[in-house]
Length: 402
Image 1 (cartoon, rainbow, N blue to C red):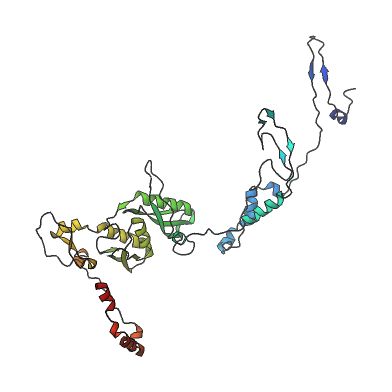
Image 2: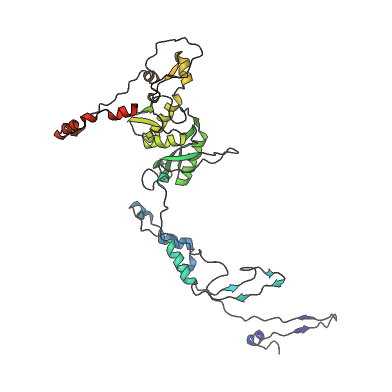
């Protein structure tokens, strides 16, 4: 009779079953309250969206075909951004909130066993998810301070990217890295065809005279930036500075077709030079300088010419040893009172020394362009202005002298 029972009646059985063995007269065993589960047919509906992964589906929505890339498509600001649909969802918590021991709560609380309980429903669960996903597609540019921005727009050149990575136990504390150039370069290979790479040129320094520059190339911007930054940290040079704010003397330097004329300036003058030289001076620790550029404006050549000139400059002690004469400074704020900066160990002038500026420039004379008078000096009103201000002439100089 037990074999003739159908599945519907078997599923309702939830009683104590006692089984006895007759051959060996073994004691009986019992199955206490064993529920028989219902036999249901589970159906899994398949479609295109269940066959593909989420990453593949987003790629089909956001990406552009290779033919479209060649035609310049997909570069505007209207392209779609992939959204993380798992963001905002927590396992065990949903529209129907439940307390799952071991998943959303501990299994034992104190000395009591936590039971599965249904919590109050959250009717705004779906609205919160939709609101969170709507914010994902909106791109908000980070607001940077003026001194943290680059040279132009939101591009990388001119920005700070932090110190180089540590090498063993050596840390680059106090170092800062400035990006000077970022461009894409191409290399034609035999098997891969035209291969594109990103080239990044940086300069790093600690602001106390220790600095270096490096060039990095890679397929991705982050990899190229990391390579350039670490190379710059491995090629550090020490630069002498006069009173920790400017160069020791005027100098001329050349690299390739790039010519550079650098002049020392007093405190408070600032950096009047090319923006790449200004960024290099910031990481070196030079605050007052004037530099004039002639010839090629190749950015890498500019930086190399500047570092060559810094390394070739001579300190006052070296100049005193070479010439056998005292190095004396005259300042207008001190009424041109001479102050000795360096003296030679033995005062035996070996040769006739030219003017100080011509000596440090190796006899070169920098051409100073003639300053033409402004256009308004030829107008009739200028003569009227001179007549009105004639009796006030030289008053400012007299006031300063007093």
